[in-house]
Amino acid sequence: MAPWDNLSLNETTLLQTIFWSEDSSRLALAERLAFSKSKTNNLITGLLDAGLLEESGLRGSTGGRRPETIKLSPGLGVLVGVDLGATSLDVAVLRPDLTVLARHTETADVRTGPGVVLARLRVLMRQLLTQCGVTPKQVIAIGLGVPGPVDFESAQLVNPPLMPEWDSFSIRDYLREEYSAPVFVDNDVNLMALGELWRLQGGLQNFLVIKVGTGIGCGIVCHGEVYRGANGSAGDVGHICVDVDGPRCHCGKLGCVEVMAAAPAIVRSATEAATSGESPLLAASLEANGVITPELVGQASRNGDAAANRIIQESGNRIGQMLASVVNFFNPSHVFIGGGLTRTGPQLLASVRQSVYQRSLALSTRHLEIQYTPLAERAGVVGAGVLAMQETLKHRRVSA
Image 1 (spheres, rainbow, N blue to C red):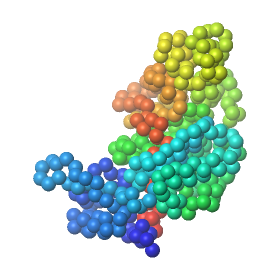
Image 2 (cartoon, rainbow, N blue to C red):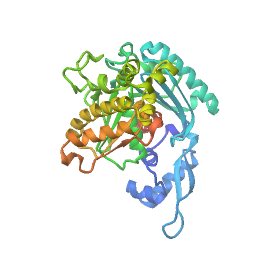
Image 3 (tube, rainbow, N blue to C red):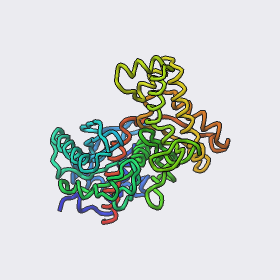
Image 4 (tube, one colour):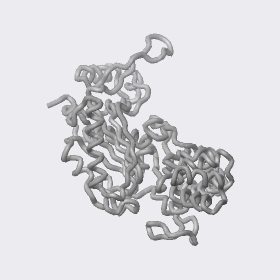
C-alpha cells in the first residue's frame, strides 16, 4: 500500500491545513492545528520521508532563525482541472499546490452533447498529461465545472437550461473508463468561488462570485464554505426577473436577467445598432469580422462609441438590479465578477457598481467591495483544482 493510501487522521489534517495555508512554517502549522511543536515536527518528518511534503525555502525572519516553509510535494501526483463553459473548454494539469503545469483553452459548444464534448476532453487530457511527462495513474483527482445545476453527490447535471442533453448524464462514469482517479463535478461558478476562497486562504468568510458569460450565475461563500443549497441549485440568479415585460428566456420565463444582460443580449443589441446605422464603429467591426463579440463592443465603447456605451451600461444596470436584491439578502463583504463579459472593460463594472449602490440598503453596502475577480481567466481551472484536491483530502480524512 502506498503512503498516500495509509495516512492517519492527523497526517491528513496536516495535509489539508498546508493546502489551505499561505504561511506553512512548522510553528504556524502547530499553532493553526493546536498541536504541540514536537507532534507537528514528527508528523512533518514522516510525511517528508514518505515524499508527500517538501521544504520549499526560507521565509523572511521576524527575529531569530528564519523558518522553513512546507508545501505539498509534486511526488503526490497531479490534478486535472476542467472548466467547461457554454462556448469554451479550458483544461489544465496542476501540481498539488495548484501550480499550473500545462493548460489548453479552445472553443466548444455544450449543445452538441456530452458524447462530443467529453470525447474531445479526453483527447486534451491525454495530450496535456503527455506534455507534462506523467501518466493517467499519476492523476490524484479530476475536478470539472459545468454551466448548469449539479447534484454534487452524484456529480450529475439536473435539468440544465443551457445543456439539456446533459441531464442525468454521468460525467464521472465516462471519465472513469480511462482514469481510476476520483472525479468531482460542480457548477462552474461554484468552482470560481472555491478558487477565490483558496486564493484568499480563507481570509474572507462571506462573499459572492458572479459569472457573466452566455449565462449568469452566482457562487456563494458563506462562513468560509461554498454553499450549494438543498439540491445544488443555490446561486442560479440568472433567472431572477428584472422586467416582467421583457423577452422570453430559454428557461421559458419572461424578463430573466440572463436573457436581458448576458453576452448574447449584448451581441444582439450591438448587431442591431450596427445594422441600423446607429453605430458606425460597430458597423465597421461587423463588416471586418463577420460577427460582433462582447470584446468588440467593449473596444468600441473605449473608443467613445455612444451606442456601445449605452449597451454595456444597460447590461451592467440589469445585472446590478438583480445583484442589489442578492446583496440586500445575503450582505456579503465582497462581490467578485468574472466570466467572458468582463472583457468588455471597466464600463460594465462601473455600471454594476452604480446600480447596486443605488438600489441596495445603506447598511448592506457600507463596506461592500465590488470588483472583477483577481484570478481572471484562470478562476475556473484553479477552482476545479481546488475542488479535486479538497475533496480528495476530505475523503481520505473520513477514511482515516
